[in-house]
Length: 194
Ligand code: ITT
Image 1: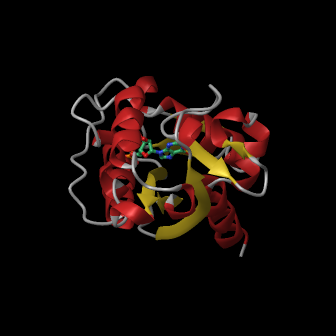
Image 2: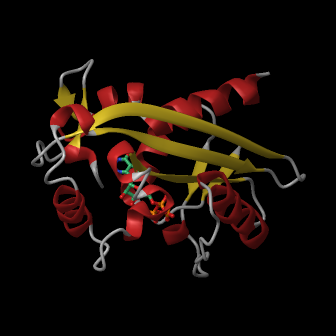
C-alpha cells in the first residue's frame, strides 16, 4: 500500500496530480485530510526551491512520502513575470484578478510578442531521505481575452498553438496529456520506474 501526501492547497493541481499519478500510489492525502494545518512560507527564488520547501515540510510534518508542485506562468514580454509570484500576482490573488492584471500588463503588446510558457517544478520527498526534483514546461501565447471555463488559474488566457485552443477550452484529459505539470510528473514516473 503506497501512501503519498500532496503538499498543495490548490484544488486544480490536486485533481491533476491525482489523475496523472493515480496508478502509482494507492492512497492520496491532501492538507484537507489532515488534522493539523499545512502552511509553508514559499520564499524561494526558483520553482524548484519552493517545491522542495513544500514537499520536505509535508514529509516531515506527516511522516509519509510527500509531493509538491510549484508552478507558474512566465511571459517573455514581461521578462519572465509573473513567474514564481504567479499565485499572488494581483493584490487580491484570485484567478480572476490575476488574469485581469496580466491582460492589463500586455494591453499594448502585439500577438507575435505574447509568447509565454507554463513551468512546473515537482519535488518528491521520501521518508528515507531521497529527494527527487523534475521540471516540465509548455509553450503558449497569451490571448487578449479569456476563452473557456475549464482548468484553473491562467488557463483561459493560455493558448496552445498545436491544439488551436486555450487551456481553458481543453477537457481534463487533453490538458493532462500536454501540460507543464504532466510533463514534470511524467519525468518523475520515469525516475520512479528506473
Ligand atoms: P500550492 O502552493 O498550495 O500548491 P498555489 O496555487 O499557491 O498552490 P503556486 O505557488 O505553485 O501554487 O502558484 C501557482 C500559480 O501559477 C497558480 O495559482 C496559478 O495562478 C498558476 N498556474 C500554475 N499551474 C497552472 C495551470 O496548470 N494552469 C493555470 N495556471 C496555473
